[in-house]
Length: 601
Image 1 (cartoon, rainbow, N blue to C red):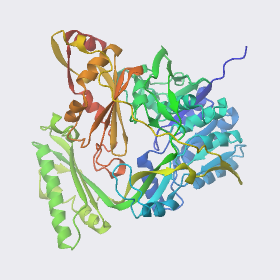
Image 2: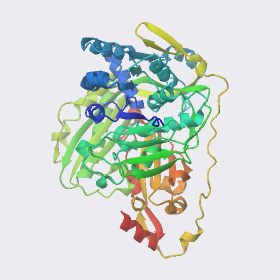
Image 3: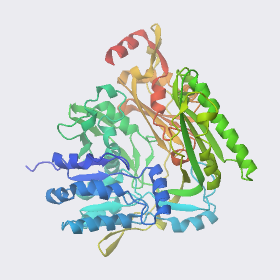
Image 4: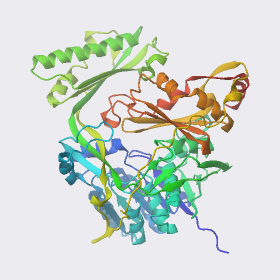
């Protein structure tokens, strides 16, 4: 009997800037059939847009060609490993041209496919005139649009692979499609095999952030061995949608159920209606099982027909930004830093007024080392060594050039112990993201291999409307938990947690260390209590969702990131610290559970 077919996909990049060790490590392992490279966070799109403003030939993830592909190109050809990447960014043709030149110079028989159709910037003017508004804020579309790209799905990738492509380069596609496309091609999954598409999307979602699936960012970070050689994730996928997560043999990191559960929850909203271009996913009943020390098995995703719209990620010019910093040492360093920041803003405001310039559109003062992001939960007001960070936004560059000149004078004018000014901070264009929905029939997708271009037929009939999960009032019986004497312990002893971002939304996924503790966590971690604990950062509502399959809760925090991405003036614009702050929250539990939790961790 023939062996069951397994398609092995290695996650070789979680963002533009990920380590150069990933691709060589995965290729050398002999454990992969595909490499997928994800580069396009929402913030990255804004960075690429800014880069192309300065140099029109840019706008793609140059590291993909110059570092990743250069290091493994010959091995890819020798071992017949295929590659899929969204490194094309907002200028995929330039990315493909650079890659094809490298391949030609190396005289290798590799075919590169270019997937296009995501660039919808030509439609923005008409859409603005028709009254289209930003999904998050309801604001009208801005006048000065730099880029606008629809999140395409996996069908064009699968079609390009079927046509013989060895490397597929896309612009904006949803991250998980980089893995789903190969799975559709290899297993013959169709556009209406919704459960399978949801399973393949989940596999892509788990590996799309690189080492976050193999111990990176794990709550139990001290249990993760050998960070310098941490292994990048490999999804071993079957035709029935079941997959296992592993990593190259003899690498660092860890394959742990808790780490994979954390990544499942990363950057999702309603787990019962996770909307992707090809399918609406329901992850509530997904189960994650530790098969052995090297494999975690994942199954149980369900799918519904997709919507008839694409989400569009766009960027627009919104003036300029400058960020200055100083180090302040000594007694009462926090107070001195706060006063220094206030003085810089006040002085430059007066100078702007004297020069006939408008006021700042926004300013922000943070003190690193004072746990500013913790707000009322800070424990470090007495620190004697801190860094002051002052951010200013303005419509005109020359106003911020004035601001930049007034950072260093603090070194001799105000607080004792002021140092670390360095050179003048740079003024940069402020490129802000926004998003809206666009009918799929207005976004024709194509792919090209060489001079041959083909249209990709997209299923357009109907279209589901995602319906939010019904809020669960009590997922499990909680009454038996209130018999014993109570004791307060930090949440970290009871759960793993990870946080992520989508624009101005932050989500915090909380996974019970023991499934039997989930009712207790549901009872104690109400949206009201979470909002109170993080209220100094979260301005909007807090939603709560139940994932019984992995004994988890997902919190979605609205208006939580000061605009998010490059719009945010905060030190943590992506909400990476939200879960860490929530894990500090004291939880009242029966004394026996407190004892077990301490012993377990």
